[in-house]
Image (cartoon, rainbow, N blue to C red; front, side):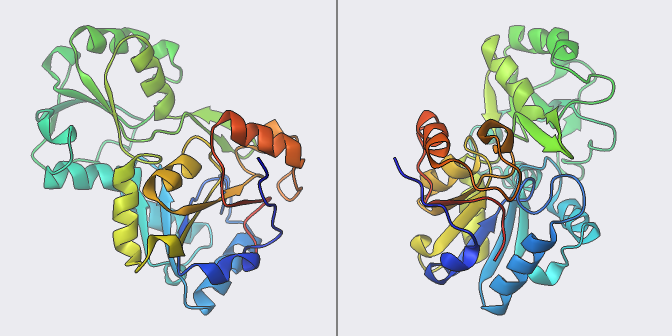
Length: 290
């Protein structure tokens, strides 16, 4: 397996009309937006390309858009934002997506303070205990429960009651300013290990890609490129959606590849990682730049 390495997106951009861009690890990593990534997106817009951000952030899209603005990415640089949180909200609101449309109306929330508003205004309510819940709404870890171990009792009860977990962020971990943090996907992984049932919303699952393609209004899927740094999320999600993918190696994979953000990885090491994941992206790039 040989993965082409490119230095800048300009080497591929003419082949595509629409771009689905990951956020974390591609345009920022917890701090301000990377200047070279912003400049790259500006160039895409100057060439008339359509751009949608797709994030596994477990909150409403408007919140994600505000975070992007605060980090230096103005709203005129993209056509839309879709978060896994927004996709979850859409699924519950429309009641068209199985199995979410058959779970019931009461949820037990696993989330940090301030992340409890995802279903506000809809016909759903929070349950005070597992026995009264129809499903677990898993947004992430919290200061009260900062580890998998701190969730073991709750998750064991839920599994014993046959309660389905709705995982609103399939990411297992994220790198924030150089430090790895667990995400909701880690709780979902543990829940499955103890026999629980999980319904995921976000990358790499198909629903979010259908929504993104609708937002891009792309005439042909082969003219859409997904850009991301996750071999377990961005790349398989794009493949399953029938679109090309560009792998950013200087984000989540940098430590495994032994590179800095701008450093090109060893081709053999990159090929081995992709082979182990059973993925073959269209190309790879150290960091998103023009």
